[in-house]
Length: 194
Image (cartoon, rainbow, N blue to C red):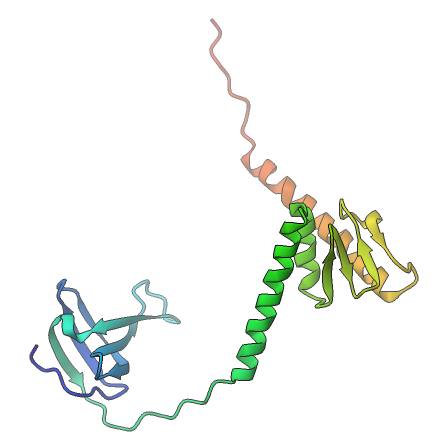
């Protein structure tokens, strides 16, 4: 493998020909000399300017490597990841999945699950109590999850807000249910008379 250097500078332009005769050229994003893995970024193959293709190349499996443009500047130090924020995000996602699993285990209908997810988009304090949705420990929505199934203090802000959310959700579901029927309906077929 002619032309392989011990190190490729970040930002250098490198051309590789793989063992499958695929030609890859791109900007070096990372290089690990121990494993001989090279990560190249090139223009997106689908033609969209806002996207890039990223290739992970095992240099042990290439027949040709050429440095087309050498960059020897030290790479810009990347900011550290906010691990606390990432861990919080993971915990929130795990908790959301647990709530969904609880709904499935309780045998909640798909309508109830959809309503639960709709409420969760704006309010975090939503739980299941059997098949019932409990919001802010103040409002309970029982099956079949319609506006008339919203229970709680009718004069509280939470009750009125949740009732409006349920009304909008039901309305949106009805509109969505009617759209496919309108789009897929076909004229009655005529069969030749015998």
